[in-house]
Length: 319
Image (cartoon, rainbow, N blue to C red):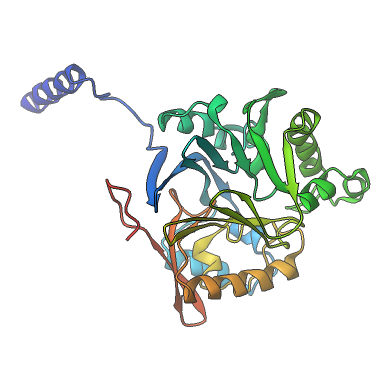
């Protein structure tokens, strides 16, 4: 025991002298891949425990529990909150903005992750918002202050119209997981400062929002939910937003109702169609809630799908 303590002490001193932190509980908060000539970095905003039984309420009794057990998971399931940095020439582009202060201790780490990747919030030129739920847009404003003062916010016009509509807010059901009154309040708080300074640029249909980046609206999860596609040198990366929340449940059973969806029925159809297309066309996917870094492919498996994460690569390879 005495010798073990001595060697632990010597190892600690050696690591300290080399400038490597010895006592640290922090996990890696960024991971980069190359898409053609463009670097994409996954950024961790945090993780949040989600009650799978509540999320998929109305499913066949016991089905969700069996699927979680098959993946060695326990309820509640800890979901990643992923955002992505695209570095294209002088452009520093975020896909989603994290949760800011809206998820309490579970989120709000995006700016820290961004700095770990060597980029300051003031350097962000554009932010592509997949939709205006708190974990995707909450990081735009913290304590009433714009966190990305020089960024243009790109978002579907329907998202702005829906979430900033006072009548929609008044009619909102407090029990609706994806559209309760607080969600409307959050949207107003994070979008209004950028709207006032003319930093919001909207679109209404599939369009090129920036060089190398297409916006593809897929309404259902929210009225203006959007998938963004980055292309470079015949390589593509699909930023999925909330096409999926809980991979262990939704990939083997894509037809289950997801109560984070504003339109549950519409998004059930979207998911199955999109999952099939992604598997058939071998899309490379960046998913906001699949375990960090959330980058990989889908493969058809019976009536469902499997998630195949990209292999770890010091060179940023995706295959």
